[in-house]
Amino acid sequence: MNALRLTRARPPRDLIDSAIAVHGARRVLLAAAAALLRPRPRPPDASTLPDHLRRDIGLDPLPPAPPSARLPY
Image 1: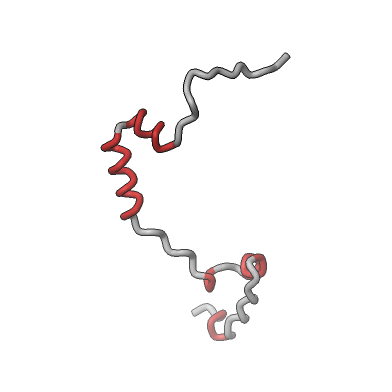
Image 2: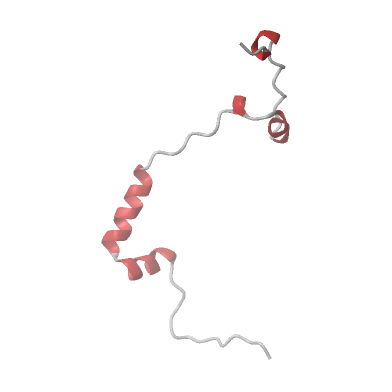
């Protein structure tokens, strides 16, 4: 049979407790503070998305470019 052996050696621990046990309290505290102070990235501008992706997220397609913008100079 394929069975897991259940042992009662240690109760399950939280992720923070295991991170502190592995890396130390100071390193975990500094990593948490750095994560809180890190600026969040801005979401991409929807005007730069192609029409098929705009439709996927529920936006209307962009109007066609004016003829003067399509002419090469």
